Length: 350
Image 1 (cartoon, rainbow, N blue to C red):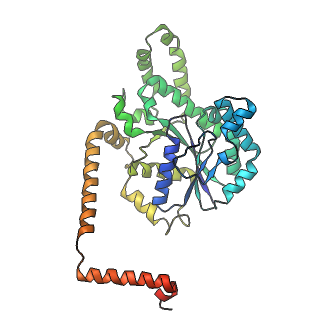
Image 2 (cartoon, one colour; image 1 turned 90 degrees about the vertical axis):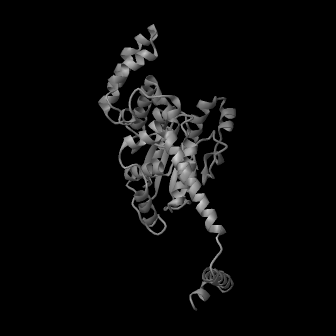
Image 3 (tube, rainbow, N blue to C red; image 1 turned 45 degrees about the horizontal axis):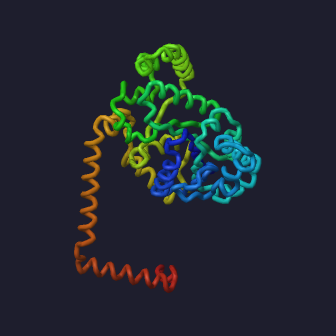
């Protein structure tokens, strides 16, 4: 059964960077993966797309033919993809049932809040027995402002209700959060979406004008709405950090019901070992300490560990081989040459 991540989020949330990083990480743990670009405006992906919507329809052509602007052009392009889905899906099926797919979606919020096409495409994948999870990336910068945090919560809630699929909201670029100054509350307040009424005085301080007073009741009503649904919470991600990636992929695998087996090289050994070796052990406090409270100290420790590993690697490569090691190396080289010359049967004694 094929599995797929559907990566959505506002512009600048790091979707393409995430897709590239996830592709590298999945390959490292032995999971055969492919990235599919669904953004007709993205003509410079930083990953090798296994399938690209721009081979079927481009934003530039739609804008020229329909006389539309960029936002309208992207929505029209997605409608065209929906109309010609069978051809596109045939290309997806050629990637194989054992490929783990990552879809890089456009950043226009209309597509995952109220427009029908993206939802329709996802439902077609679901009906084709793909196990899907939506990964909604939101730049962690937005939690530094109480009013913007309320806005992204509403956006996340609307996306969850619109797409109606297993959904994981992710605060991306968590490694940059310490650059924006101290937060009014600890990180778990934002990831767990705790009592939002505590934010109302902070919002009033952000906008002490008459206009801000007029919107106070609206902010309170939105906060109550979000808490009444009780659906939104966040994972966090630093895309270049292995432990962060392990923690997030573990959550995504639970959401899709991913089962280890033939999809992995050698079974689930590589991934199971990875989850044992790293990851934050269930505590958001560990993440706050690593990326917010003591980021500089942890960065220095990791830099030193990296330097020591490089020194050990260089030292090992420069070390002169013992006679026994030289003999083993020559035997391995000879076996490789003979195997290439006579085929694997020679190596197996046939």
